Length: 247
Length: 258
Image (cartoon, rainbow over all chains, first blue to last red; front, top):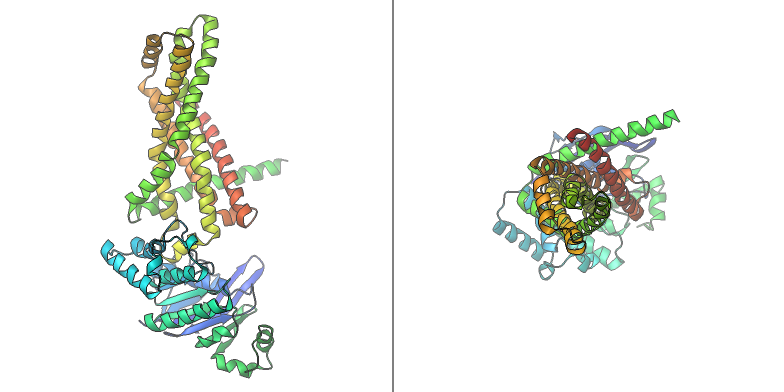
């Protein structure tokens, strides 16, 4: 299940505000790439452009060397190669955990009810939520909701999963748990993960690559350990503010 | 002044165009959905079943009041025997479709606009899109089809209960002969009257549900405020625009039908 994502010259502006000004990024197969940067700098916008929720003004996105359509609603979302895990989970309140996970299978595949049940039950077991299958999102804890959202994102076997600040609103212990979960499931399911996170340095523990988005472009792209070599740059200032001590 | 009026007119026409396209793409999206019947039954429950009690209640009281008012008007001309005709025709041609639509807007339309607004703010609509599920076809399309089925049925319930209400005040309370009352009802109502009422019900159904769904679905674009205030603004505007739409369309359809 090869999934190499290549982004070239991606631009997006809202009125006079240039949010993305020519983003170039390569996400390699079965890796975890984390996008870091200041709040409001455009990290989520970048994910939404990749997923097709926002239409970029210019640029090219290629998946495994094949260009993808960039218009809203016809890009990544239609290719079923991508899944998206939202900051606030975006679970359907009126559906149980089981139904939330089953939704993409019910609506987009030709699997019969038995096959769907088997898949969803297997997924619930993987995320250790078998006992909570019939509970509504309102009856689940923050961590459990994250796991339901992750299960829903993974149940269609996507090649690439986009995580938009997956640890928002969680305490340090649960944050660590979510990162561990992403790392663990990535190894188990073999997907490629693209994360947006503010949790520095914790997120580096699971990241194969780190991309620093600043002033609309990717100013640093490399391994987490290479961040130490950036002592004199603006990135160092950002990392210091984010409590990333000199390691 | 003229510029402002022009802007307002252009804005309204533009909005109507957007709502029409929104409704069409929702119906097209629904046609491509899987499990259409399940979604339709859920929407019929939301728009039809849940609204039946309020529509019947308002129908009954409307009939009761009409029986009372028309009796005291007709009795001045010694024409109280025409009560059945007056009540039935007023309800079937005019009040039935209009008041039914306004009741459904108040009950189901506002709830729908709020629900879609919350789903928009909570990124549930975006989530559908990332799952390759057409959000309009999934959320709006079944409701539009349900409106086409439910509005005429609710209108019929309103008419029947209203005519019965007229009978209660006219015959039971004010002693108009019940045989005369029902005879006048059956004699005066023609198929063209019923058809006209149903045409109105169909148009009001599509119009109101499309406006309410459009407002809720586009809360992020159309509301002046983000968050909860945006949702409440969407719901309020949905109800106001739908109600104005019903009354304006009623005038247009009536002028064509008469």
